[in-house]
Picture 1 (cartoon, rainbow, N blue to C red):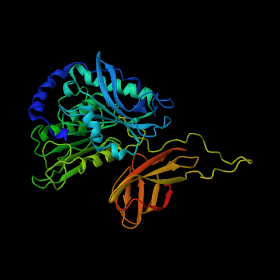
Picture 2 (picture 1 turned 45 degrees about the vertical axis):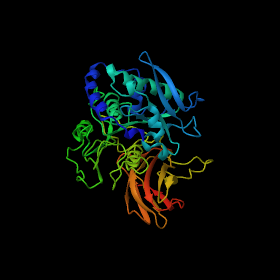
Picture 3 (picture 1 turned 180 degrees about the vertical axis):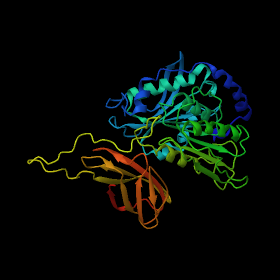
Picture 4 (picture 1 turned 180 degrees about the horizontal axis):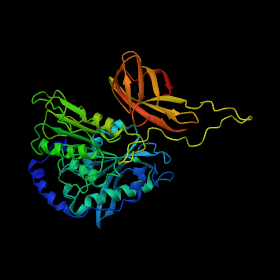
Length: 434
């Protein structure tokens, strides 16, 4: 595997490029940032347009240079559907094609055609970000993609390993009102951190005995967003040497909508650790599943970074005190919620499910509870965007702190992974409010 032929001397030398990042970082992607932050714009200019971009290698003028990236558009692309957008940055001496061929760090196979993927190509196969040139590339690619394709502005993400992790960290520092969350695998501050004072949801992953970029470097990046996100400082538990395991910690006390997660694993400098083995493996690593769950936990409305989300939302229209004599009342009724299930992905011995919770009534729903019955042999292993009781049989899922309020005709989702055969959908699905 190409990405495991990482040149240790080259990445060590790349650290000196940090000094080159002191220049002003590129701009030009400002028009969409405020709207994405305050929730006034949910989609981009490309929504509703017949696309001209196609999947494959694209060239673009950026900062006076010819740059390139690989674009992956979902099969059956719907121009009226807002899609998640994920940037995958390559490692030193890697390439955009190596990221694309590895399924964008294993996320593409999990996406079920819900996501637009971008793999930019770095100059000299790295991300020195001299004078902000690579942030300018991020801005220019984002603008080109979003002017042509339908993107949910509250669902932009970035990730990368090693030098690619450094670039993802630079994006989080400099574009906090653009990017919703980042994942940094075995990263360090090599591409700069212009700004770095505003909250961004952050997931750091690092090996205990990383021989290229010491784990202390990864902890330092993590702690930037522990502070920015208002999380409670702690020394998260890490596995012991020789255990061949990993431990993932979710920080407590973080500002609503801005979690910080840290995963330390018993291993060296790799994006593909495997529990119980000292041999990295792209197909068997746990990282892709945990990253996908971290990214997909977020609803499509970004909470403002300086205030907590409101506990209630006003209805869009005042409910009538009496129904017009010639019109029957709405079938859903005020405050009624519905729950609809679909299987997102499945594999031997497990599957991923998603439930859409919708307000079918005319007034705001303030809190919801979904009940469902799993088939025999099915057991929930993880769940996001909600809190659940029980993992088998009759399961109850209640809203998280940030997605319980639904205005008329609004909806949210929660998802889960489970063991067992996903061919049989959960039954007896009901939704009540509160």
